Length: 210
Image (cartoon, rainbow, N blue to C red):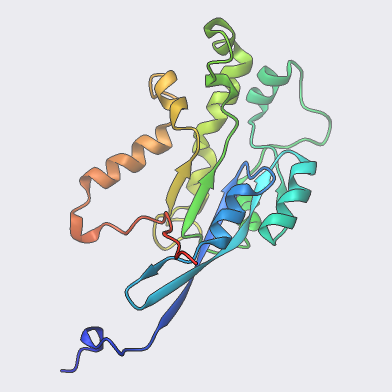
């Protein structure tokens, strides 16, 4: 049987990969994904942003300009976390985000990569240890884990396969004994258990020069 993969003259293939952003901010991460053009063999991919969620309207205006798609205004705090962080109850009409909110924000499509850029001020060395352990900043650290929001983009909901997840706040886990990132721990455990033949390649793109 003829194997086209052995033929150096086989057709050049193109694939679109999708990314989604929690705490998307002004869209620097999304813009980086969009500009990447990973190439493996005769396959070239381009990234397309499905959207993002953030609590800052001004940041979302920049996000749409940089990412090319609108973001969704959404507070990821639970009511209890909101109260601890702000020192007061949420305003009238405020509701906790739901799984359906997340699916809608991602256009009900499957992202290949989920990028989390949560505030990590609660684990910053610029804060005193005593301040970082106050209820206010512990509430912020708890939001970093995003336990209740990563589930909606798992296979049982939107996705047919688990997405790769990336966060800029690796140091957050180290400064809090790893207790604030159960999502990352579960993801790492899955990688350790998976045989090499079933592991997906990393979604960190390698771009061509020039």
